[in-house]
Each structure stands twice: as structure tokens, then as C-alpha cells.
Image (cartoon, rainbow, N blue to C red; front, side):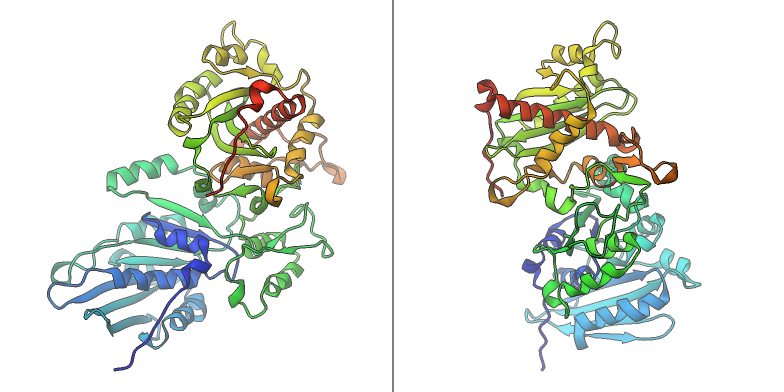
Length: 503
């Protein structure tokens, strides 16, 4: 009997490895073109099939995969060939208007595998009927960004029905979605920003699953120059990203992505080269020096429960925000958390959200200082009390980082951290990737708006949608306050400077 070995070296793909280890019902992976996310998803179907408990009747592992693509043409020209390439002769596919695949094999442990692969193109006439009648063990949505949100939930409703009876029961089910960076404002972008998190958490509790949705972002293939995407000069230098995934398997290596830079459509470059959400911008970003891949890091790399100190920074008004940061011993400012409120006072935000989160996430930490808009020293948000007074009553040691609220010194403070390097060559501004709204603001939405005649505004847009200006302003105050600490050598503060070992 001939044998066949099929594998996927997960250790070479840190992002995809995390996705494999996730227990979420819906696992989503965004990344540049050619980053092996589809190949990984295909092998994840096979891995799940091999882990399925054998039927007590005939010792066979039964599994049914449903592979979905937006159009039949792309299903036939891209997805099915990818599956054949990954499975080799193990997968037998019946071509035609309704392609069907099957894997039958004897395994080394004495069990057998019977894996069906059903294919569904959403542009086919019977797509709706096939979707409503599907009974998959697991689903792969290839290029999910081209599909409507409703498809995902329609698929979730069909999960867990096969195998059953004498063929056993389902061990692992779920939906896997892979895609290049979608357009900003799309439903996937809203999921990424967490706009559905509260609803998803409720559904997960009701379903009895650990997590309903988890999204993973692969590193960009190239590191863009400062100013992109607001300006795109072919002579600008793009650098190979050493953390990019699957470069070793591309015939041209990084050249595969350098060729894409000739495209005048910067949205496509964002999507296919960077794997980012393609921003629809109408202005110039305030901080072109900011790059997600350089200035952010995975949340799990810092255990906040072990931190000894932290700083808070607030912005007030009816969309109040608070960010949490810490100062490392090498002068690096690390932003760890963000909290936002809608149509409430800063007192409500602090009591309902910030204080409980600090107790839960920073049980061994001390708030060294808190900073806020100097205008917050004046009463108005609460009867006879200023926002500063309100927070001080709650025990928050808040001060104004400066008597003036002039814009340029605030922007310069942020840039001083953003553009200088600390130990190990990392920038001195690092933002944990759970701070999604702050990252989105800095990367795309905090802008000088375009004006008539090709001019741009002199001051950044004051947008409270997505807390863009609120979070950006809070970063201004935090940066100014920490710079003041560093320049004055305040002993009361310096003793709390934190040492962090990266996990």
C-alpha cells in the first residue's frame, strides 16, 4: 500500500499558528496576497478531519467540509486548484457545474478517513437552496471580504449536523474566513474595530462556546515609507518586512510585492501588499510617521497583572475616553488599553468602565499620574465641579500636562516618542493591538481635511465618530505628561518606571 505525507509547517507562520490554536467558532485571517492564508485554511480542514473521533460502527472519521467562494469562476480557477495542490492525489474532485471532492484514506493508527468536500459559489442559481440545505462539519469562506455579512450567520446556523447517528458526533466545528484587507467601513472592518463585540460575547455565552469570533492579522509584506497612503511616490523606499509570512515560498520573494507598487490604486496596495483595510481618506494624516506594523505589538506579549505602575490620560465631553500607558526604563511609552464612552460624563465612564477594568487588569499596579485637557479644570460637565474635580474625588491623581492647550507642542510630544528608538531598535511609542480605535485613528482617520483649491486644514479634524479626535487628544496629553516626568526627573514618579520582559 502506498503512503502519502502531507504537512504545513505552522512554526513558520506565527499568525496562522495562533489561528489554528484558537477555539473560536468563527476564525478570520486577514493578510497580504500570497501569505499562505488560503493554503493554511485548506490544511486546517484536513487537520480537523483527522482529529474527528472515529465512528464506533466502522472506526471511520467522518467529516464534511463546505468551501465557499463568491463566484463560480474564482472557485474553479483559484480555490479548487489550491485544494488539489495542497491535498495532492489524496483529493478526488468531480468537476462540473456542482464540483464535489472526496478524501478516502487509511490512517496509520488503524482508523479510516472519509472526508467530503462540497463547493458552493454564491453567484450560482441554486446557491441559496444549497446554503439552506448544507450540513457541514466545518466551512471555509475564501475571500470572505467579497461576501455579505449575512452569509456567515447563515453558515453558522447549518453547523454541527454532520456526522451524526452511527457515524458519530461532531468534535470540532466552525467557520474559517480568509481575505486580503477589505475596504474601510465594510462589515469586516466594523468587526475588527469591535463594534459587534458585546453582541458576540452574549451569543457566545448563550451558545456555550469560548468565543464566537476572533480575527487575526498577518504582518505586511513590505514596510511603507512615511506618508503612505496620502502620498505615493514610485521613488519612495519600501523595505522588506522580516516578519512577513510565506516569503520563502514565493518564487520572486519580496519581488512579488514590489511589482504591485506600480499600481496607481493605493487602496489595492494597502490591501494586497500590506493586508490592511483600504482607507477611503479625504485629507492628510496628522501622523504619517505612524505605521501599524512598527508601532503596535500583540496584546498577549505583556501581562498587565504584573505591572507596578501605569499612567492614565483622559479627554472629556460627551464622548469621554481614557487610555492607559506605562513608561519603560528606556524611555519607551507603551499604551496598553483604551476605554470609550458615548453620551455620558467622564465620571460615568470612570465608574462604570475604567475603574473596574483597572482593578481586574492591573491588580498590582499604581496610578502614578493622570493627565487631561487643561480645559477640564473648568466646571461644566458636572454641577459646580470640573472634570478634574470629579476624577480627583474618585482618587485619580489627575493634572494638566501644560497650562496651554496649543496644538503644536502636543503633536511634537507624540512625534518625539513615535520617531525615536529605544532598546533593541524598537520605537519609543508602542501600542498594544487591543487598542484598535486609537490605532485606527493614528493610521487613517486623524487627518487634516482637504479644502478647496488643493489646500488642507491647519488643524486636525474634530471627529467623534470612532472617538478619533478624543483618543488622539488623550495620546497628546499622555505624551506631554510623560515627557515632563522624564525631563524633570520627578523622584516620586521615576521610582515606578517599569521593566518589562517581552513574552
